[in-house]
Length: 173
Image (cartoon, one colour):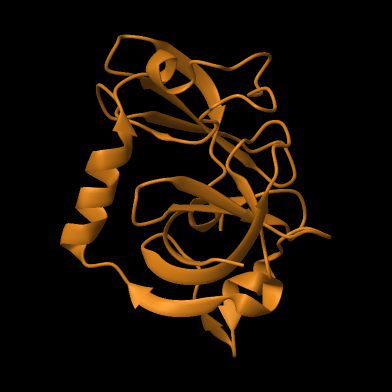
């Protein structure tokens, strides 16, 4: 299994204690590490009681086979015991990775999307960062349990996206 160090860019909340993580390797390939069996949970974000997987962290994984399961094409199986903290990026490195991976608009990012999924075998991507034209507007449906934060944003191409769920784990907590 090849060992790769990722700069973690995304840690998102899923149902229950489940989370999704994604990051970029040194060639700026987006990778979404997944377990062969079971889901990644919040406990996987810690090692010996210390938080090691968070946006801006450098984390090494032993990676195995790539799988393509809708809605993602960036999924690569990793060995659970292989997770190793490698420190964190500097402010300069963080800005560089975000600048080099940002997309100007939704249409340019999701060129292969069909019914909110990227089909298996598609080059993707299914994950990415979009530069907004202005500050997103946040709102929250407090009548749901738990409350569900959402945003409205306009991308650089003028496309308006309403009620986009905010799944960032830190924001939700």
